[in-house]
Length: 259
Image (tube, rainbow, N blue to C red):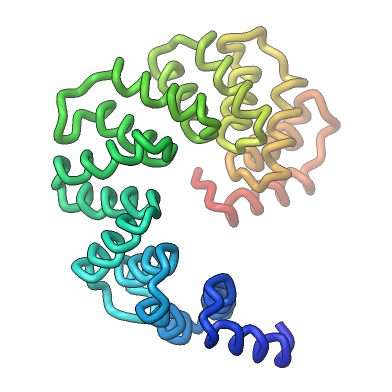
C-alpha cells in the first residue's frame, strides 16, 4: 500500500468509517504490526459496531496485539451478538467448548441453528456426533449436517462424505464428494480422487483419479500434491517424470503434508 493511500485509509478510519477501520486492521495484520491492529480495533468501543465488537473479541480471544483475556472476549462477543452478529454466538460456543461448558455452547449454537448460521449448525452436529455434553446421536448429527449442506455449507458436504466413508457406505460417500468437488472444495476433491483411485463407491478409474488429484493440486491441497507426485514418480497413466515428482512432493510437504 502506497503511503498516500495508507494516510487516506487512516483518515477515513479516524472519522468512524467502519469498513475503513476493518481494512486498516487487515493491513496491519498483513504487515504483522499486531499492536497497531489491536489499537485500531479499540476504536470500535467508541463507534459501537457489531462487527467491530466481534473483531475486538477475536483479538482478546487469540491474544493478537494484546494479552489473551477470555472474559473481555466473551463480553465483546455478547455485545456483538445482541446487536445481531450471529457469528459471534459461534465464537462464544468455541470458547465454552474449549472449557467443556457444553450446555452454554449448545445454547449459542441452537441460536445459530434458528438463524441458519451454517458453521454453528455444523459444530452442533459435531457435538452430537461425538456425544460431547449430550447423548451421542448419529441420526441428529447427520440431520444437522444435511441441514447445513442444504444451506450450501461446503464443509458439511465433505463431512457427510467422510461420515459415510467411515461407515463403509462408499456409494453414499462418493455422492457427497461429487457434490463438494462441484463446488471446488479441496477436501472433497481429494476424497473423490481417492474413491476413483481405490474404486470405492464407483468404478476404479486412474484417469479420473489423476484428474482430481491434479485439480486439487492447483488448489494447493497437500494430499493431492503428494499423490500426484506418486503418479509421476511411478508413471501411472502419465509419462514418468522424476524431477516433477520430486517438486510436487516438496511442495506438498511445504503445504503441510506429513508422510
